[in-house]
Image (cartoon, rainbow, N blue to C red; front, side):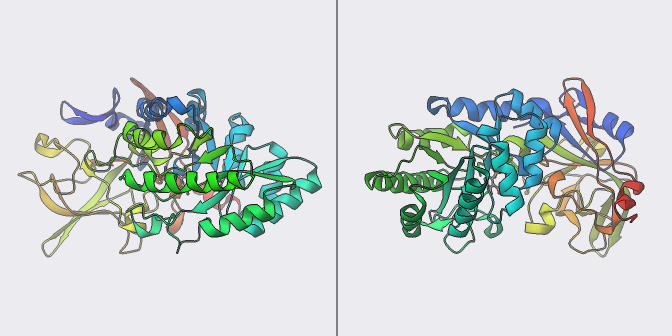
Length: 426
Ligand SMILES: Cc1ncc(COP(=O)(O)O)c(C=O)c1O
């Protein structure tokens, strides 16, 4: 699952005790394992190898430059959704011709910059966007290639806020409309509409939704090809699961084994956009207990890690396993399930200092007793954690640390109070 394990009573990332990182870098701090990133990327690459896919790591899940660089060295390309993410990919020297640019609201400036940079594909979400790209490509006299994002109307069986492949969501165009879009834009345009894109949601811990949506996409492609359109690529998006509790995410091999037979004889270049399945288990957020208090039957652990570093619990009541870095009484967790209740534990809410009742990292958890100054870790915080951090309550953003074996380095510095006000000194 990952390289965060308890040894001799305390939590390590690879061969580095997290306590050492906290002592040197302070808290809250995000800690990433290089080996976990590598393992998860390699598993996807190997599982889909038969189809030689272009794996476009989804930068939105964890966008640190050192991590992008490390993934590029492993052979990854990138999925970007903004000019800012494109900047990050180009900054680390990614091959622009394999970058995909997604998102429902690309601006004129972003499109111009992306065409100028020679990106591989725009994942296009509407006719208006296609018109826009076509016009800009014409003005620049440079080619642009697009994949039409279709909405397969498949339920990914995940949280409603992260469901994207159902027809009532804002994403893509429905199958019927897709045919009309190809009739209008599929020939003789500056933008070459030669691919289909789907992304049904995240995290998708079931295989069937991928089978259903890929089958629908391939059927659509066959019928478009019968009408004479040239389609040479299919992007099946991201959304593969990460393990927040036990082994709830199917292995990469299981997704691949289900999808490969559908694609084997289609002569399509496969693109994938995995984010969380690579980054999710590769990070933890560590925080320090500032105070404890009780109110009625309830114990509160007030940590310096809060919703500004880990928004997912407040945003969609997402579950992150939380446990002390050096648990009292040597209570090492046998697993990370929400139902864990060991003898000697107390019922607690783990909350931050932010002025919101929604500022919690964990609610109603049975944790070992914690004292002021103790360290805690929120697991599976590699994806959609640091990237969603905010400055709310004027909190400086936390540093990021990358561990490799028995060494670690800071890959993003902690912001200072001065950083918070610099852009406002006008
Ligand atoms: C279009 C698209 N592709 C890929 C992803 C990455 O999803 P995940 O991190 O679950 O793999 C997302 C996530 O929102 C997305 O919207």
